Length: 446
Picture 1 (cartoon, rainbow, N blue to C red):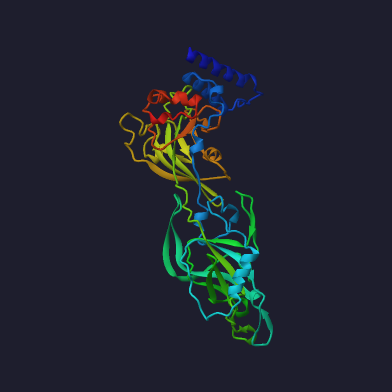
Picture 2 (cartoon, rainbow, N blue to C red):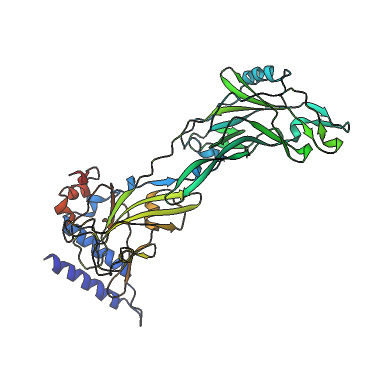
């Protein structure tokens, strides 16, 4: 009876395609739509369900990770402050009038010729505290306001990020010769860059996050001295917090480029606040199991293509990192233009890793696909991943996954084994049918 109903359904669609045509237009019924309509009927019949049973079903896509590695690829200064709280950092509090008064009481006093750092941190915030107004006479007797000529705040570091592998992303911190590491947004004795946190909506300014660097030596460039770097800094711990003050100097070849120090470190003051030591999120994969829609009826073993996946965002670039596990279909099937049987180095009509006791007969194949578009979640990303199957007549079908529609594919934990060839998934996992009606059922744990 099931096959009779389906045959009648397909015949009606076939007739509709001809009776609706004008002249030689035989494409009124889109083939993809035709196959997906047939899939709906077969899915509902095979599992004895209706559309209302899975109206809001996510098909496991809510567990698919979209990993943003943008922030971890930044060598040092991380200026994208609107996302710091999203990344788990606690923003430094605003500088209060009482705090500023206590800091100036220390840094307005004449100090020594040099100081050492009091901290050894690799990740910290640098926060604007005070732009000095002290004036100096250069050797040409011209008046110079020191802070106006202090550019390019920096720290000295011997750490550098070496990217070992972009996909999947892997980095290491290596030691190099010491160099001046730019602290972004600090110029002319100030940082007045304003930002808004996407998470809390808090508006703040004058803060930069430094990562993968050192905190042992701080310096500035002098525009009076053609960008020469001076390391005239004084670090003090005041009321439990650390502050760095700078003493202006210029030592150029011409008299108007020569300014003597006064050993008062109040020309520019910043606060150094520790980062929270945020650990990047674990990069986890999920397993995708799919039906290729290649026949008029499906066996619903969901092993026509099985692959593990994670989506990676790096700036404006999106990549799907894929580990191909099995290919139980016998039709040409491509992911990102790569034919899966060819990846396994077998003919298209050969099933791979789906026979009983032979799920790992051939080694998995890892590859990556660059995605076009801008995505905020895995739903958008999975449907931007081009997965196409071609039937014997040459028609091409794209596999998709959408909430509330029958599952052409679904996501499960990577520990989930797939069905043997021609064995319905409901036979291997009886609770699968329960999951269709109730997405909280973890049928793979049986």
